[in-house]
Image (cartoon, rainbow, N blue to C red):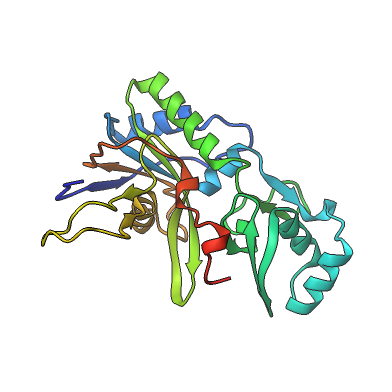
Length: 257
């Protein structure tokens, strides 16, 4: 890659995103208000939550009828059976269940807590609503659509990363990772190259999109900052783009399940 420095800047002044809203105009308007431009090679890291909000990925738990499996699992871990039912619907398998902990393999292949379903920082909606927010149906498609719309509006060929915060095995704390990627390589495969001493690289693969998401997460914050979009400038790449599936380890190679 050859970068010696990157510049990360949060996009201020983005209002609450509502279901059905078009994110590209909202971002372009916020960029203009902030005096921020976009140039080819910039990367926009966008929090999953505002993508899901725009796509209307809300579920009201009042409308959820838990299955027998959800009732049994909820009783064993101490969670709302309606919430557990929604998690199971979004998951292909339960990886780990313990008191107040539910780790699943999401239908997209990510291993994550509660299938990525969130209750924090959500507007209340109608009185009495008990809303939760699901991941986008296809975060890679969402990233591609946002990238195309920004290109049409600004003529800038940017990369887009849709990010979410994950916990990690054997590590304390959360870190942002890439759920959706468009316009840049999600992984840089350095295998076959050489290190500084001429040794052949046998296993080195750099999770570029995850690294960008993690860096942007520091600028975004995780609480009340209300800055869910970060522009990254100064990155250069020369290999074709790929989507987030390049980051998923095949189940057969998962030594932690």
